[in-house]
Length: 111
Length: 113
Image (tube, rainbow over all chains, first blue to last red; front, side, top):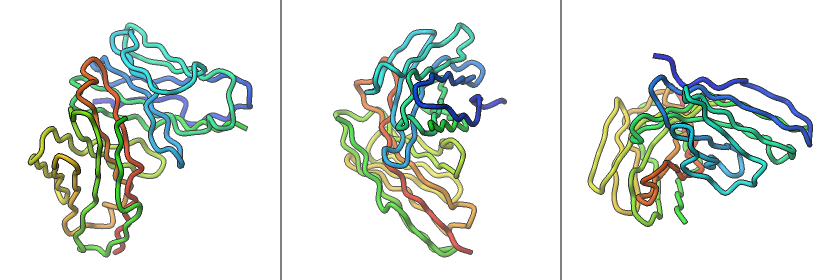
């Protein structure tokens, strides 16, 4: 069965721009979570969506936002990019909440 | 605030040399403790979920155990393909209406042939 698909795999953006990342969960999984991974901070929780509703949110500024569609696909958006937003952005989907399957991530570089 | 501390930060083993990785955690109430493996350039790969003290789970050369304050990932007779970063994460009981995993920084394991 297909895993969690994240697109694009790599992105290079300029400071001040905005970016949209996409995540397609495993078929049947309605929960989608987003994480930011950096060498200094490790994996940090951004937010979680379930049935098109944001269920939980981490401690990130309002420039980070997301949404989920009726087919459970999710997007996250970062506006007014800063150099510190350079990171690997990971998406995870879950059916039961007892295990979370991660995608390969989107590597965002802000220059 | 939930906290997870993993040790050591890095570990080098010879093939066949067994060892353990440690994950110490602080959480108001534990809903689940997760172990993941992450290879360079890839997302974390799920290994185990543990729910209560005394629980153990095994998969091939890996065995995870849980106490009220820490979890251990025991690696028996490791092979070079076990080289990866191993991540530990906790989910708090209060997160009953959603999921938030709090991760440790990971242990980078290298197994030399």
